[in-house]
Length: 260
Image (cartoon, rainbow, N blue to C red; front, top):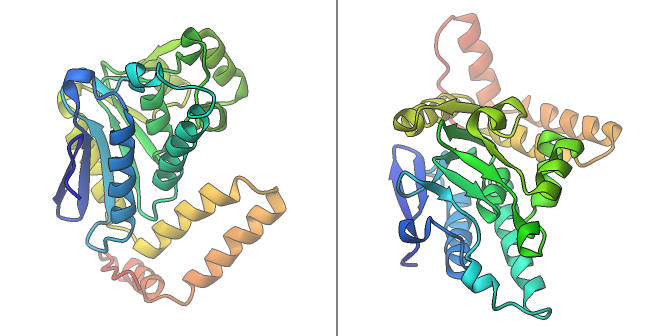
């Protein structure tokens, strides 16, 4: 599929995916959501890719929100399917069986904030600003924001951000746990890549199982989640990667994981 609104560049196991509508501050329209959906479905099945970095083109915006001109045309029949399409994309990103890290390089409002929330980790540039301003337009977050934001920063803070349409700068986003790290804008992608490559050096099966255990186990009662974790722990005991990891530790050398 030829993309018009996103770019994908692969570099030694990392897929760099950019929302590429800088003249629109990378706003998410229907076509862009469709292209991202296709891209992440392909990435999940691509054995040459071990991790993904998602960012926006330009220096102003990660994704400044949904395309308001397109949203303004919605009615009661079309709006729900639109929300479900956006939610499907966010679910696809969250369930990707390899690390997906958002490099939030500027504005991340509305759908852009929701896009970042769906990623496994979020790193921000020092000029980033994030928020869910949908109530100012007479709507609510529709791509998962009302569900993922409370799970990440807590219900009280999420309620405040959503109900007051509050914006948080990078420092505040880091303080409340909305982003994991903050870097100068010029260093953001390099710092993100450094962390991603560190994750790629670990056992890929273990990383995949850890993603699954956190994503799904935290939605279960604690007893069920613990059982889910123990199942993965048991499965890993039969892998060559576990044997290699233990032997490398005992021999005081870097492990050479093969993903089996």
